[in-house]
Length: 298
Image (cartoon, rainbow, N blue to C red):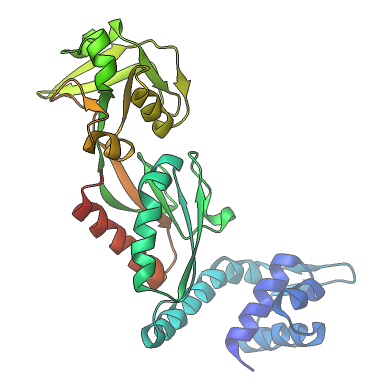
């Protein structure tokens, strides 16, 4: 009897509380599932499950095994997938989470470049500005702007996001160009409600922090939307450079307050602690780190 099949049968039964449900999950018969678990108990010399006419319960020894077996099975699956990928290239699906503006402004292009070198891969990309639960949502890797305090996650820093104040030439011609952060109190500012304190803009110039309370007619929950409003001449936006690249490059936006930027914010790839990182996910993270460095995205 195969030990791996025995462990899989035990984990499925312990989690579902039923041999029938476990058999459905594994795609085998109820009789075979029960036999696998019985063989595992014989192999270990302990009872792992308490069987009653109504349900299946887990013994203390079973609880100990259940706490460790799923991770062991995941690591084995990852190992076998890596060996298989070594011989036939990266394959399968990578499930990715990212903030909306970062995803729209950069992630799509980066994935296109990565995918061109790995035709066996497919991608499930989910864009949202709130931090997702990687485990419950089945996410392999999340790209995040800002610091994560979750101990269950491993973090690979990809760079630092620079935030700058910008406006259109037309707006500046009509309202004047601010020279100091305090000048922003006399300007129409576009507020990004994704920021922790939308009306409180913090700049660093010559290692000195300047905090300004700003006002404006427009509030949006998107850095890209804030940039679009600035492009339309409706005020000054304070947004990450990756959301402003095209406008700054072609002169439709102008950075104001030269030498003053927001404090750098880390951009990272995060994934679950305690798991062997699949080779395809590791390859994507390595590619993103190099791509961001080379392109100067942040």
